[in-house]
Length: 246
Ligand SMILES: [Zn+2]
Image 1 (cartoon, rainbow, N blue to C red):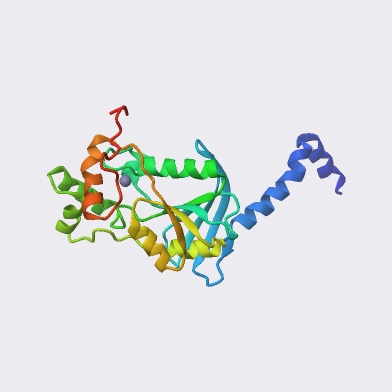
Image 2: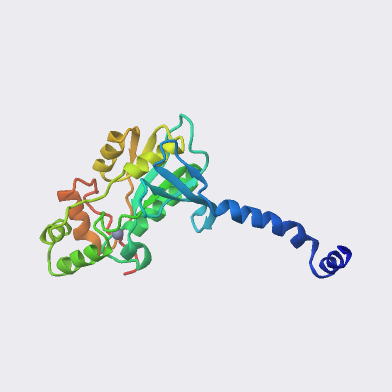
């Protein structure tokens, strides 16, 4: 009784499909479940895949932290474990900058520069954190932009709305770095507070790597505020992007 179905499959389906499909189905079943959980249970790696990008091919992990619903991402290259410090950027998402290429900030350029540095080094990771608008969320960030359009700087706009200057946290990043076996980091940031936060969370920061990128002249006031009121290290000339398309 088996002869007929077997014969039919053999004539209609290429051999590759006959052997490949069960493998893909088995892989799909495995991928449908979390790929890894950290020893303390705080980090769940939901998925892991390679992703070719214009900056190179990266391993992309989607992870959740502490039972939260935020889908954070780790975009990495190379083996991150071992004694050698890892080039790391903790990058908070920016819809306006990264998707709309807003001139109000330099987030998209910083993300690109970080990925390019990691690709060039052959080893490193961007932790892409879902904390839009320095953690206040997109709606509040756009409210703050409305105040900035009327003359408030980025700090005053938040305060007028009753919001913190910076609501970001990095405990999820420290837990992820620990889970991936990262022993120390070279942190790509202009923000010394970020280095201190990660150190306080138990991840040694052995070096701070400045991430200076050309920014649009419209971002000048934002960068000046970050330098003057938020302790960011920004060069005096602010790299305002001479020669960039407006
Ligand atoms: Zn931004």
